[in-house]
Image (cartoon, rainbow, N blue to C red; front, side, top):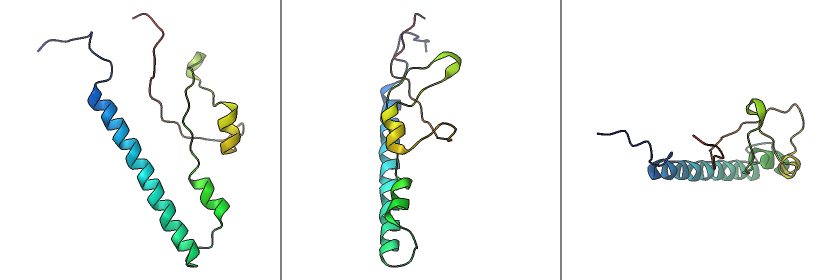
Amino acid sequence: MTDDSDGPMWPPEMFKLFTETGEQAVETQQEMFQKMLEASMSGGMDMNMNQLGTMTGTATFKTRVQSGGRISIPDAEREALDIEEGDIVQAVVFPVKRNREE
């Protein structure tokens, strides 16, 4: 077996796995939301719709890596998700395009 360094950085199987994992996460989130909504409607939980909405807030966007490895969340996403300076968020990062010579 040879080391083919000219091959794709991310094999198609990995992209397929990323896609499937993302779809499963969305399905799981939708199922959880549905169950919580049903419990709320039946009186099993004391929760209003604003609290349910904050549990499903996510965003997908492209951004550039800045010096020191920093990334910025665009204004529109920060406003939509009510993210302010100092808030802690979770990020999942996928390289999209590399602009460098290797």
